[in-house]
Amino acid sequence: MDFYFAIIHPMSNTLFFYNSLSRKKETFIPIDPKEIRVYTCGPTVYNFAHIGNLRTYIFNDLLQRTLIFLGYNVKRVMNITDVGHLSGDGDMGMDKVEKAASEKGMNAWQLSDYYLEAFKKDMERLNMLSPTIWEKATATIKEQINLISQIEQKGFTYKTSDGIYFDTSKFPEYGAMSSLTNDGIKEAARVDFNAERKNPRDFALWKFNTTGKKRAMEWDSPWGIGFPGWHTECSAISLKHLGNPFDIHTGAIDHKETHHPNEIAQTEVATGKKMANFWLHAGFLNAESDQKMAKSKGNFLTLQSVIDRGINPLAYRLYTYGMHWRQTAAFSWEALGGATRAFGRLQVFVQENLPNSTNLPNYDDRGSAPAGALPQFKERFLQALSDDLNMPQAMAVVWDLVNTSKKGNFQAEAVKLLLDFDRVLALGFSQIIPIGQIPENISKLIAEREQARASKNYALADKLRDQIQKLGHTVVDKQPIVWYNRQALLV
Image 1: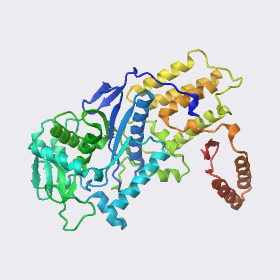
Image 2: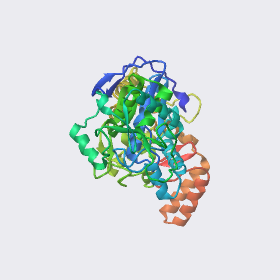
Image 3: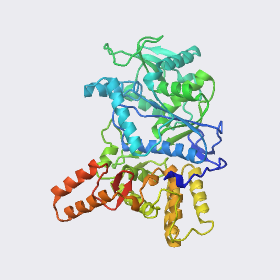
């Protein structure tokens, strides 16, 4: 039903983003208005992404969708870390992928491919756009070696028994966006300190295999057999596909302290040019205990754990809109329940006010919007997006539109506008089937099943549910029924 709305918004809308590098909100001016170049730090594929990770990727998707909504072409690159991310923050310990593969009786290649596909499935469930380019770290070993060689030629490296390190003392601008003090850096370094490092800020560009055992992922290099450090891949991949400077670099808030300062240092030393103009960092979604949700701690929730409670993944997406993307917050099942109910109300509003034809709508006698009503809602929605992707404010506009349209009797026109907004919101409104198009055979089976459940004939209810699912629909025992293409989502 995307054909109902085909509005191209002017690129004259002024965008403002909070830039971690300058620590203030700035006007976004594209390097090339014909194409916005964006780099997204992607997942380390040794386990399932948790819902905190996915909140960050929802933010990245919102950014991409907003830029497209405003009329820009977007080239977004996402790396996949399948080697080099060590279990210790100070470039020490085991490679996370190798370690997890060993524990699960798989090789590193198999494990990383498995969790990459799981991550892509979660993205699909959350209605995320794919980046323009996916790039695995293991696919750019040549580029990473070349990058390290450039840094070495400029005199910014030194060798230890376990690898090649970047000498941060030679780069005075190091850590400009970081909030860590020197004492904080020294304290963090005590956890896994390499005595051969010249100072705690120095980081590994290339690691040697010091275990005495052959790794699944290791390569020859000018410095010896080993593997790249975690930070090296992002610089090499962004340079390969985006050049520098590019427009926007995104990631989670923890990247602001170490990973991104390391990227900046190695890229700008190697090229002599700025890496990126804007650095956008998403806040954490902590566990219910308000502790950081982390795979290493085992205190994380996956998207599947949300689905297993009968919650639509897109309700979780809506849940994330209740907080600004830069805000760190604690997860709450109660709040997610509220978002699920709100999502259901929006679904029903759209379905009840959709036309029953796939042709251009011939609306009934419900009336039409007062002159100037819809443009002001659209302008307010755009203003919220343009102000640092303020999704709580954008959703306030959505609810005002819904409520005002009910009072003014112009719900059909409001749904048309919601379908346009959904190009950013990605809540699946454009895929809802009007009530008049619900398949009669499915409606009959649903009614029979509800009657069986009411009479506590659960064996028959289960049998009818299986029959419905074989016809391509999903039944969740909550009301009301909202139909999406060939899938019924009951919220």
